[in-house]
Image (cartoon, rainbow, N blue to C red; front, top):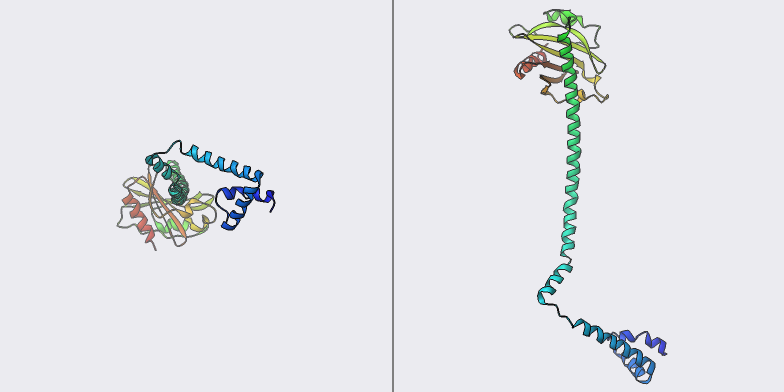
Amino acid sequence: MGCEQWRGKLDAYVDGELDLAEARVLAEHVRTCAACAAEALERVQMKRAVQTAGKRYVASAELRDRIAKSVTPKPARRAWHWQILAAPALVLLILSVATNFYMGRENARRQRVYSELADLHVAALASAAPVDVVSTDRHTVKPWFQGKIPFTFNLPELQGSEFTLLGGRVTYFAQTPGAHLIYQIRKHEISVFIFQDRAFEGRGEAAASLPAGVAHALSFNVENWTQDGLRYFVVGDVGTGDIQALSKLLQDAR
């Protein structure tokens, strides 16, 4: 084996990484080759110099312990666990923000619907002619709407109740025609709006997804529900008990 090939193995020889048979052959070569012997000596001296420099300062046990802890993979694992925990938290945060945004938008749309109905209620009461058909008789008011709106509805019998029917008129909400009835209780007027429920579907109107029940808009209470394909709204400045009582009469009307 030539010197060039042996020199490629001198580092492994000095570090004791050659197998026993090969190490013996290289040792015999070094004893007879001045050039390889000088290369091997240089590597041994470098190794000893590094070892000596490393012993000039001996770290205390406390320092070694701190260093060992600083290079331990545990922080990396903790960071990995934090990432695992943070991912669902981030998803929940995004869902929470999205849900709040959606709920806020839906509440705003509902309030807009209630506010527009409250405006119709106020405008009618402020008009010189709040109703176009003036009658306390449901059998007069109901037929009046025939041919004026594309649906029919039932009105309750009010005998024995505190409510009085004042009359009705045709109204429009979101370009949809409907019936506007006005009732009176203890000198307070209550508006009842009736529209076809399907007129709101597929048009992005908030009224199509309004939750049933009593809500508050401006200074008015509003109750809405769907029945027989119709959407009812009861609006007034009376208490929720009166709103619900009139709503119950309308729901039971036959």
